Amino acid sequence: MDTNEMIDRYVNEVGEHLPRKTRADIEMELRSLLLDTLEEQSGGEPTPKIAAEVLREFGHPEEIAAQYHADEFLIGPKVFPTYKVVVTITLVVIGVLHLVGLGFVVWQSAGETLIDGLLSTIFSFFRTAVINAGIVTLVFAVIERVAGDSLDLPEKQQKTWDPFALPPVKDPDRINRGELVVEIFFLAAFAAWLNFFPDWFGAENFGEEGIFALFTPEFIALVPWFTASLLLDLVLKTAVLIQGRWNRIARWLEVGKDLFGLYVAYRIFGLDEISIVPFFTWGAKAILGIVLIIGALEIIGQLYRLLLGRPFTPKTFIKSRFV
Amino acid sequence: MRCMATNSEKEALYEKLLLELRRGVLMLAVLSQLQDEQYGYSLKQSLDERGMEINEGTLYPLLRRLESQGLLESDWQVVDDTRPRRYYKMSQDGETVYANLVQEWQALGVVMDQLLGLKKK
Image 1 (cartoon, rainbow over the protein chains, first blue to last red):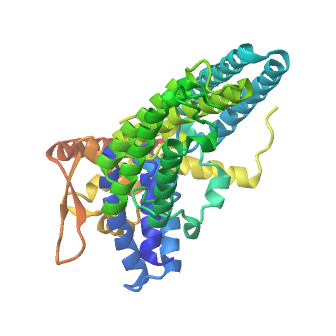
Image 2: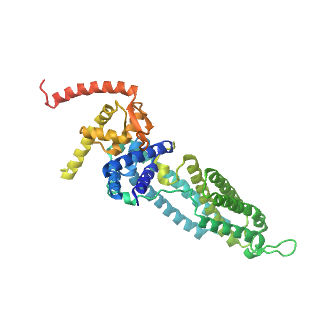
């Protein structure tokens, strides 16, 4: 890692913990200050070793960010590690209790009762998790305000701080052409398979009426919607591939495409029967339930990033206020 | 019953108290050097040379806080073909506040000298 890369990584890491409103300006100034200091301390011949010393003198990136926005953190870096442990323990306990409950539901129920039981356990998990995480957050926000100034940054964090181990600057808009080409190929293949070779997945035509061996006619009726969702994805990815990187318009289109995909998934999920084999219907519904939850969370993450300009992680979400 | 603090705990406590003591005067020290405009690193050097050493992680955020409070103003400049730098200078409000704080400091200094027995009444 050369000196410029190290400074870029440091500045980026500080920026990760700053609100969007002031981030670019602080990053620009911090870079200028670091280069001034580095130039002076190295006598005009900077080396990674001297750069690392300069960065250590400046301090841990989170601590610097906290200094810049001492009064804007909901839960600052001094309290955050403890907060993270408490939230994790709380969520693990809630998760284990619900898993036990889930086991009980599977053991006791069958058919539609089973699906109802599964859904109600999943919703109960999210509801309980959100409420309890909220209470813990509130308690720690109070601790931050009452005792935040008198606390020190965790010793472990100070000791493990190594400029050579800073994470690389992420560029979420950069594309991996090979990966994108493979995705486009499989999307096209899947759409073709779904529409031109339905018998391959058990939907066979017998005469004019159309008798489907595995899937119900209600599901087959939704195949065009499903195909449209795949084609939207395919067109968007092809456009991004031609353009060379993701931009804001493409990201908004991605949100639209994902919302449409979620709608299609919801419609399939809402069918009484997806397959003529009940077991397949339950399995497909369980998978679709998970897809719907993950898909909704992903869209929230995308919107968060588009509107607030920073990646969505529990850390960035909780640690700073919305600005 | 209170346990006896170890040496490292005593040192840590001393460092903390020193930090609190310095925190209050840092702002005044910074203002004193910004009657003429300076950029971050030149300000740090100027303070260092006068015996007021401040960690970068404390000084630079402090500049922005003072600016947001209206005591400083800043702009980006390119001087002598170097890289762009942000130059800070005391604002008009800052000068007024600074003049008042200097008076307070003098009065406080007299009182503290008396309290600490450094100067006879």
